[in-house]
Image 1 (tube, rainbow, N blue to C red):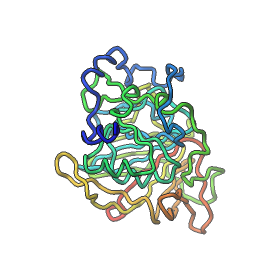
Image 2: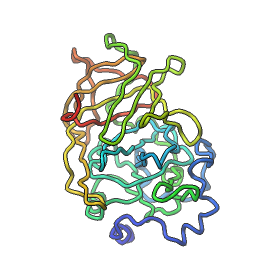
Image 3: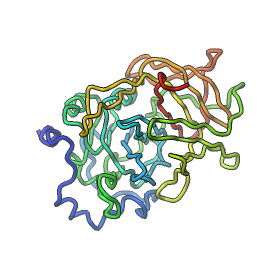
Image 4: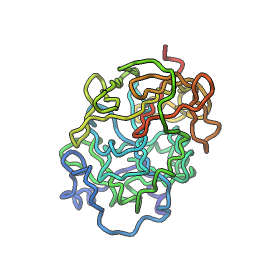
Length: 323
C-alpha cells in the first residue's frame, strides 16, 4: 500500500522535512567525493535487494553537467527524450560509486531496455502519472525517492530539478558482479577489418555527442554539445567502446508536463550499428530477439563483434533520421 500511495502522487520527490534533515549531507554532487569508495553507514537493505544491477536515470541537459558517478558505470545508454534532448541510463554491476546524478525521471522504453536484466533496481526521480502503473507491473525493483528517501539527497549548490542524487550503497548491499551484465555484449581482441576513424559525431535535434579517439588513453573522449564532457570529480568521460545503434524511435502514448509526446526507443528487433573501438569503426548488425534477451552485434561476415574491455556507451539514434 505504501508504494501505491506514493506512486499516485505522480513521482513527487522528497518532502520539505526530508530536505531539512538531509541539509548537512546534501553534497552528493560536485565536491561530495563521489568517487570515494568508503562504505555507506550500515543499514538493512530494502526488501528485494537481490536485484541484479543498478540502473540510474541521469539528467543530461547543460544545467545538469558535470554529472557524478558516471565513470564507474559499466554501460551508459544515451536515449532521445522530448524536445530533441537526451537522457542517460547508467548501469552498475562491478562498482558502486558514492553518488550518481543528477537523477531524473523514467520513460516507457526504459522498461523494455531493462528487461534484459534479472530484476534490476531502477533509481529515478519519478514518472508521468499514467506510466507509474506500468512501472509497478514491470519486472524491475523501482525505487524512486518516495519509496527509499534515505538513498536520495539534494545538492543545495544546484537548482532543482537538476540537484537530486542517489547513493547506490543505500540501494544495493553489494555489487552484483560482471555476471549480472546480461547485455549480450562480448569482449575480446579487436576484429579484423574496420576503418580508421578518430572522431565520430552523433546529433539529436537539440543535442550532440562527439567521440574522439585518444591514443594515450586508449579511450574515446566524450564531448557534449561541443564541449568536453567532464565529471564532477574533474576527469573526462572516456569509454573504451562506443556503439551507435540505429533503432526505430516512435511516439510513446505518454506525454511530458508540456504535453509533448515522449519518444519510445524500440530496443528489441534488429538493425545496423557502428562499433567504435581502438581508433577504428566497424560496421555491424544488431539483433535482440525479445525483451528478456541481450543484444548481439555481428560483423558483415556474420561473426560476433567483440568490444574492448571497459566501459561501453550505447547511443540510440533514429534510423529514419540518420544519413
